[in-house]
Image 1 (cartoon, helix red, strand yellow):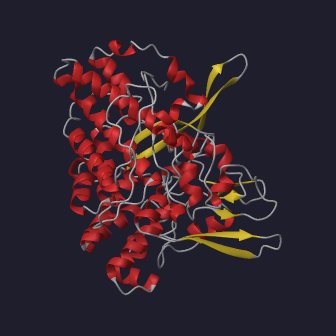
Image 2 (cartoon, rainbow, N blue to C red):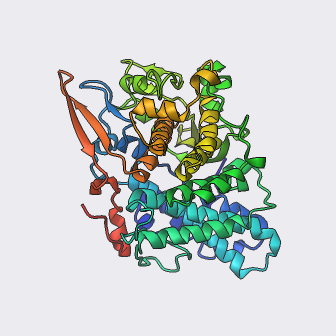
Image 3 (cartoon, rainbow, N blue to C red):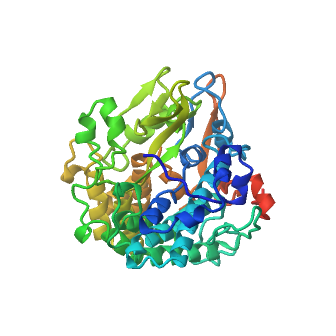
Length: 490
């Protein structure tokens, strides 16, 4: 998939990024070309982040271990992430690159929406207007997750949010304010809900690359879980498939995928014809090739902790253990790297990975949590057990299913809700290894992150990143100062 580019001006931080200079070479009159619905649809196709958050989210979380002195590479930004140090520069897998990439997508959404406002396209354009609104909401939502304090359910959320850009830039150096977290989330909700009402009837050449209704409702389920509106999270998840039925639509980890060769598996996770992939996006990234071989990464110790240890009494989840070199360099082997040649003769170009942004698996376990949060343990357990049914080898419901009593015994927790939430968090940590989901749960549930440092004798020193630690919020890129954006406190 080659991404169409119609962006005129991008966010101020991007203007000073050499990797994005191509966006400044566009004709100032390019807006006049967006004069029919097909061109709007093409433009909205680029309203998504062109980079991903995988290195940021995984390396900050407890999904990363110190493999030991002399094992693996000590490359940036992975070393800084593991030490919770602000990362400078805009190289691949950095916060600045992700920030810029998200605002590039938002800029495309805004230009599409402006074209819709200034032309009489009729109702035919509504699905693409809806997609643009939802893509804009998604971009700001993901930026808020990383660059602002977490949304505090029931709190005033008066801490600084992120700049919500809802109009195309008309000048080279526009100035922005961050507003509050509450204001940011209110605007996300407005765009999301308005967009959902417009999506019906959309025609996409490759639907899994767009916010179709199914993908949009998966986003809505995640969003409502973040803000504590559990009934709406359930309602959104129920809209993804007819009758809210996820049967046969989850990743077949312990059946089909388990039987594949490694080469087949590498492709299977990100294929557009799989029902479990709700939204896929091509992102410029060397994450798959780099992250595996870092000293601070997915190790044998962590693999054993997640997949050789019961997640609760009597039940151990399965993941294919794939390792390299020292035996400590582990990978989930799910991101197939593609190389887009810009000069075939010279053999130069850009590496891309296809990233699942939303899956049916996440939507189902999000619905399970929403039920548990409401106190509906019966329905929550039905969803939990449906989820683990495709994650446990030789699954037997009478042996492997979770119950309230089993959760209470497994974790030594006396509160049924807390015990079931603990089970969900442990299941999700293992099931979405290397997908960035764990960091979302860490900030949403105020979890303390522990990183272990090993010396030459493998003696452990434990460091903690507690909920109140200011380093949990990624620093606003320094380029943002040029647009008047205050940086996060340190």
